[in-house]
Length: 209
Ligand code: GRF
Image 1: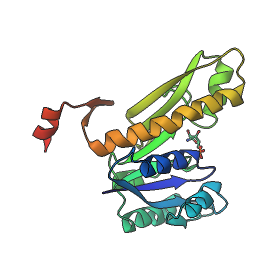
Image 2: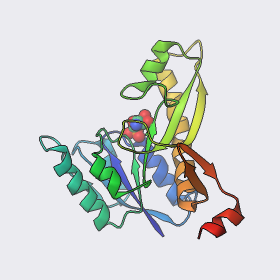
Image 3: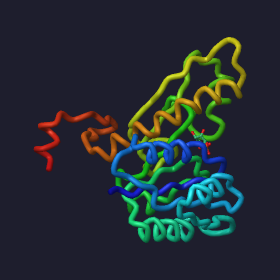
């Protein structure tokens, strides 16, 4: 059984999608062992409690990044987390944090990276006038919205769209993409060559073990 640790700061719809996938067996042999928020008022943390999951609020306000990260990493280790899933976690992780979970931290971003990193990616894409956008699940490395890509989903930008309808259509794909990415990671049938995550054949997986 693999343990997932969820970090969030807000609404938590990606967390709910992951939790639903775990409950429905779409992510086999996995459980959510802890849900952590840096904000006490994050709606996602309430949802996690209602679902009977273990939750922790570790406030970040006024704390140096490293000190906060140390608390969060300690909590993840206490709960024996194998894979850390950032789900709307509005904090940059320190390089030290990233090094504690090498290729074991995922993030979801609402654009086709490397286009439109940073905040309000859907609005950025809409304002730029792109005809296709989407979402990206990627490894977290020391740079913002930067690590190797695990899954991307495309979404057309319609003439009738505004930022909100586009964001809503991207969000539907986010929920599907995150489950797919977690499954790929937990199954382990991949290798990362430079920035490219590529699937392995069954025989190659055996050879690696
Ligand atoms: C999502 O758009 C995600 O891509 C971004 O933050 C938002 C979080 O939404 N990183 P939710 O809290 O999962 O509903």
